[in-house]
Length: 159
View 1 (cartoon, rainbow, N blue to C red):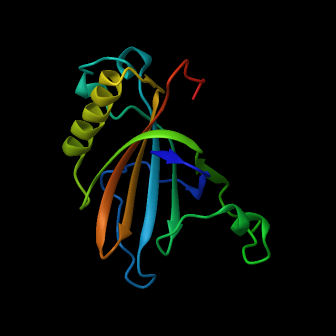
View 2 (cartoon, helix red, strand yellow):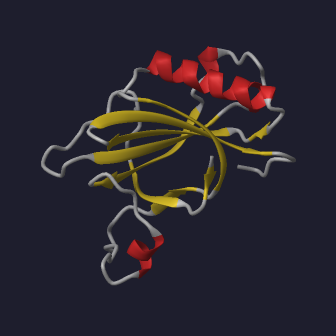
C-alpha cells in the first residue's frame, strides 16, 4: 500500500496498546496509533523471536471521531491546536506492507500478524524499516486492528 499523505495524530501518553482501546459512544468512535521500533537483529529475521515483538514503543497517538487529522486541520482556521495540547505525530507518507483484522485483537495475535507481515516483506525481497505501526480504529460499523510496516525497495532510511 502506498500512503499518499501522512496521517496526523495528537500524541498521547498511552503506554499499553493492548488494553487501552475503547470506542467512545458519545463521539461515535475513535482511532489510536502506536509506533514500535523493532530490534535491528530481529527486524530482518525471517523467523523473528516473537518475544522481541512488538518492540519498543516510540510514540502513541489518537484522533477522535474516527478520522485522523489532515494537514488542513493543522493549518486551517477550522482547527486551532491549543498551546497546551500534546504535539502532533504522524504515520508518514510512503510504502507499507499492510494487514488488518475486523476486530480488536489481543497481543498474541498482533505479534503473529507482525511476524507474518515481516515474512511477506522478506519473501518479496523488500527492505523493511525497523518501525511497525499498530492502528486501532472504528470503520464501517466495526472495530479494526491494522498492522503497517514501512518498506523500501532499496536501502531503508533511519526510521
